[in-house]
Length: 301
Image (tube, rainbow, N blue to C red; front, side, top):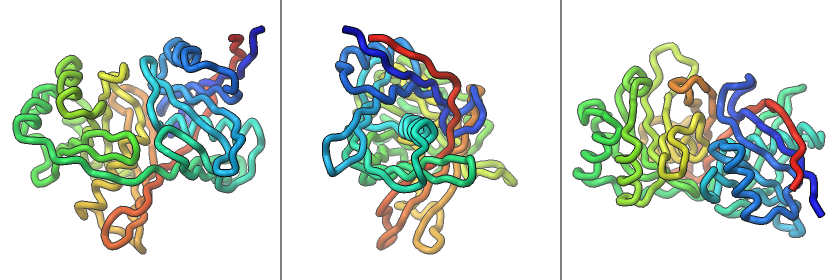
């Protein structure tokens, strides 16, 4: 006997349709098999689709699983924002904190309401830094990004940073260079196998007068997503990276900034990052943003 599921297409980290990062959301995913979820994600062809399951545990309120078009991943920032935005809107949930179980653990999500406006904040996992890339790996990375070594930011390490699903941080000098990158996708895939990381977050300082602190682009072709428009799993770790090295100074024990991502591919979005500090190291990292429903549909499986 078939079952009907409510499916949403949501743009996250924006309040405008066809901007930000699109995610599929299936709210009532109970009963779907792993194969069915993978097939739905492949059909929608978003960078991630979120499947929301009910909870029978006192430890968490909902369980959410995330699938790219080719595989399941342990966490996803924009699909978390998308799924809890839909839940808050469609179920008229009040402002407050809930706990979600994801592949990276049981973590808090906050619903923030201001009149009709809804913002979702996701607390990410424990911040970790990998070893900086070696000189030959950096050379290979620059070739794959079609970037000259002189365009990197001197004194800023290139290394994996993670809050549950790591990305390689690649600091460069200018937004103009960032906007014109045209990577060699096959070369990036080969390098991913060598460094053991699926994605590369290339970021630069914002131009003077901008209302954001950094701008970025995230490439993950080995996951089936050449470029992700606005990435929670990259910008949260970016906050930890900046805090760890002291590249930004905290105020009242916290580092807060916003990032513009997706401009180069016509899907600009703004993501906010907050890093709580303890003993000059990141203690807790949170990313937040708004969302908008593009359409909803009924799926029969």
